[in-house]
Length: 369
View 1 (cartoon, rainbow, N blue to C red):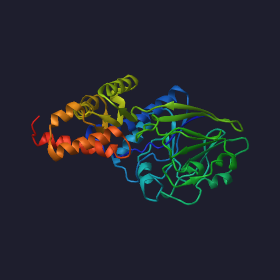
View 2 (tube, helix red, strand yellow):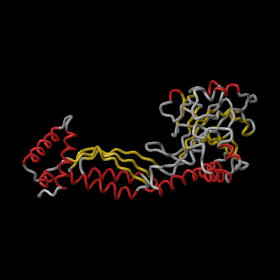
View 3 (cartoon, one colour):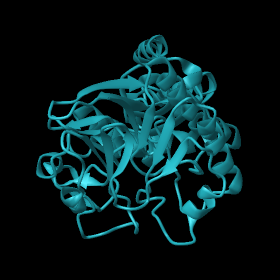
View 4 (cartoon, rainbow, N blue to C red):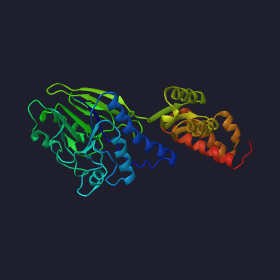
């Protein structure tokens, strides 16, 4: 059989760091991702979509967020199997009872560790989380979950495999060989927000819409599973937005222009969020112009751009120093700091910052130029 494996939708994520316009766009993209998955299920002839936890970002999403998610799923020609994760863990009288009150016939909630037949001869073995964190292995019960002889056994879990824990979000640790221990043909995992195969039978699908910088574009997994055979897993990109992190070392304005040109050639600006770190040492006047460009034209071209220029040092040129025209103690200090900058070494970075500060304050104070 073929399934779509997805996880970590985190409907209701706040994106508080962004402007209202960007927050709205990112929120809409998460709902639209459900339509994308439903369309892929239709186009690829897949009847079942399994969601390995964190459908919602919290246990208290708004009614609108629940209704929007349910509505998007209800109009797809497939069955959705939703399992609680560490963000939306199962509690009596909590979130999942609210979701049940609004369910469509093609949406199933698997919030109990019991096998369920998803299609003829294929069984889903879920390990829903009842708490945000647990010290026990939530997949341990899969071994005892009985299925008919020759049935396809698909595990569904949310957590971090033991040798992968530092990269996952949850503290719910899973053995990396759970598929082999419990006789699973495939183990569909959620928690890690990037696509990752763990051995031959275990996979993190990633999130369909990325939500942090320096992560892969959003993905799902299309999986063909046969009893006793290795699964065929296809990684499919679904994300609308790309969250990029770049570090540019700059020694003059032309290097910045070249780096910007390369970036704009490789991305769709309206679908790109960028965290840009600038480093290097350039003239003070040139630095001011470069930062103005980064915070102006470049930021305006992208969906979002944040600039970290703390390591881009302003090293005064001869023209900058001439503009200062300071004499006496300040002039001597400027010359000493310039010498430290030119010499390099452990004090060069501090000297460059001090010299830049001296330049700025001198110009601000209206010293003759």
